[in-house]
Image 1 (cartoon, rainbow, N blue to C red):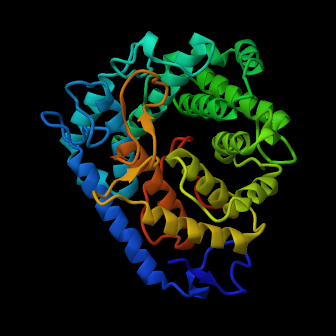
Image 2 (image 1 turned 90 degrees about the vertical axis):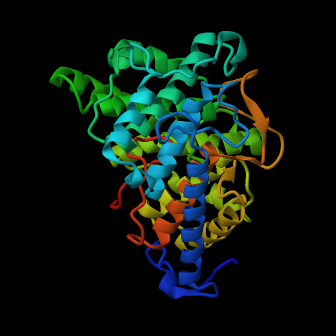
Length: 398
């Protein structure tokens, strides 16, 4: 059910459905509403037996007895999906407090979060073991803090682990060691550290706030020097093939969040839009890549009218594809073929692709919500993440 647009549409790059011909806006809104209701039903079905309300299995195949640590992953992704779709409002105050307490059981003394059972011999991301664990710890912590913020927005997290990066010499040396041959991995690491620094800049002593803000600014300045003008992305070897370009796009979309958070101009964004539109017609890839593509186009349309009508048409087709990808149980899959493992786990928890899971349900619902909010501002009170990283959408205004 692909919508058609009139030639006069999107003079300002926005998404006014009043000028659509073909698919009726009300009917498409009804599809989105139905998809959200089904997704909430799936999340409710993932409730883990004997645990506080809101503790979720990662998927229907997840056995919490065999893999208890994966309850953390299932829960934090599921909670952020609940926040997005309004389901957190159904949790009473005491239930939210109990759920936050349950999540915080996975917090280490330094403030990072860890998935129990994720052991040294079972993980792989980078040749450097320290960098492997930094990636995993940062990912887990960003998602855990995002879930806690969704439940108790005023809670101030413990961020002792961030302190080394407040030293300008340490930070600059660390940035110099980033391996931009892997822009997807590095994009995640950078946006995660940036998210922690933003939190740190809003709490604690004045000098710590100032140091955190200076560290955040340093990362953004470093990024600005390394952006590739021909593509608008970061990363070495982007021209080597489709996979390299896709990874550069997905990692760079996250890197853009640091600029959005500061309302800094983002050079060469038009080139990034050109790449995204070259991928038409949309086809479902991984939940993370698809969400990054939508993120890129929606934020670009907020900032610039460049190719606004084409962006809107692409997003309309993407919305159809996303809605069509929902499983009968109401959840969404990551991909349709292969084996799905939790990020960073080489020999740990695994399940077949195609199954609904809380991670993909959160990201694909986020993509749906971003497109819907682009076309119908104010139609629904979407609960996008406030923390930069996956699920984040900057507030309106250029």
